[in-house]
Length: 110
Image 1 (cartoon, rainbow, N blue to C red):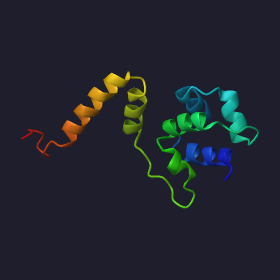
Image 2: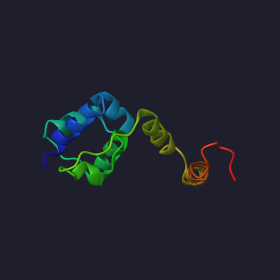
Image 3: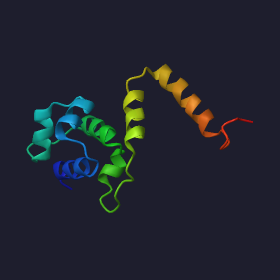
Image 4: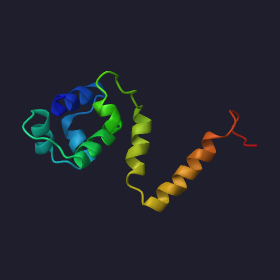
C-alpha cells in the first residue's frame, strides 16, 4: 500500500483540503505534501493524527478491501473538540454521551 496515495484518496473522498488536514492534525503542510507525493513516510503517531482528522481508525486506513464508513461533519467536529479536552473532561463527556445514548426516543429518561 502506498500511504501517500491512500491519504490523498481518503482526503478527497471526505472533502478535506490538504491545508485543513495539516492544520487540524498539527502536521506541517510541507510534510503532508511530502507524504502525499511519496517522498516521506509518516510515523504511526503522525498517521494516527491524520486518520483522526479524516474520521477513521488506523485499522480502517489499512483495510484496502473495504472502504471505511464516512463520519458526518458534525461527528468529526465532536471528535476534534473532544481531542482538545483533558482526560478527565473526556471521561465526563463520555459518561454523559453514554447516558444520553440510552435515553428513550422521547428523551424523557426512565
